Amino acid sequence: MKVDGTHYRSLWWDEDMGALLIIVQRWRPLEFRSEQVDTLQDFADAIVEMRVRGAPLIGATAAYGMALAARLDPSDTNLDAAWAFLDKTRPTAINLRWALNRCRAHLTPLREPERAAAALRLAHEISDEDVDINRRIGQNGLEIIRKIAAGKKDGEPVHILTHCNAGWIATVDWGTATSPMYQAFNENIPIHIWVDETRPRNQGALTSWELGSHGIAHTYITDNAGGHLMQHGMVDLVITGTDRTTRRGDVCNKIGTYLKALAAKANNVPFYVALPSPTIDWSVDDGVAEIPIEERLEREVSHVQGLSDAGTIAQVQVTPHGTPGGNPAFDVTPNHLVTGLITERGVCEASAEGLAGLFPDLAAVAKSA
Image (cartoon, rainbow, N blue to C red):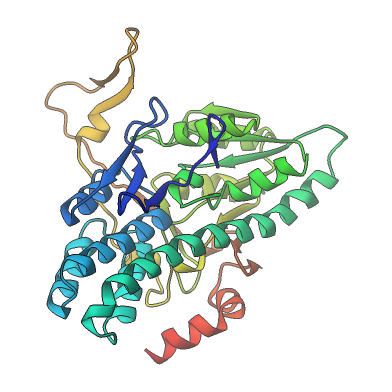
């Protein structure tokens, strides 16, 4: 997508420098910065510190990390060490391990002198695949928006609520939950997006920045406003992203998603999840019981980052001194609260049968593993 008229991906390979560059998300949307990622420690820090974030983008970043490891030392021992080092950076988003496993499986059968070039080609391939997957998610989600728009009065927008940032900056391009929005806007379908702030890191501000850059009408709201809007008929549907989805369709996403799903169910508002297939964890059935939930730093709760009156980025404390803060980063929405899963292969019900019907090849491989 574009930033001030220039097309960017969230990460890109610079052939002249022979290095990966990333958009640094810890400063967005207040300031645009990019930086070069040079060492395996840099890759790990970028993921842990959320300079890159979003399950698809974390996976692509990890693939380039494995490419760096293969360039430095293509031995099995070093690749295994790099896999373990990167795997421990974020426990919840499954794309990280999916990408690391794919890289190791691809490289292990090759002769060591062939591995560095093959690893870089694979990282490029994973990035390009992510762009295409998200584009197709958008096409399939567009059909849902079209149907709702058809029942509206001329010029009346479809009101969509989203939580966290599942936009292009959380993927390589297009985004997951935002891709249907972009494609609806590009077809001149009137839409308006309710953007949850998504405390504690206020990632909704990233979504607002994205939508504003694209010219899409939106309103930034507090996390607790969504239920009120649904009660008063001001939300036509909810679309969120996901960091890990179980084989039966339970959805793990940013903390607060579960509450939005409960409110949507109570008010008969369709609740959809944009689901790229690499986020399906076929080894997990019960998301609440089995998915590890990352517990992040207390400081993310006690402090907020913003732009001061002097125009500088600053952090301020919002809690009393000594007050402990709990910070679970994700929650799990059980499948019975999900209206449907929007994937690159179509839309299905959130169930084992629905996912296996769209992805019989992946389900079969998982069953035989």
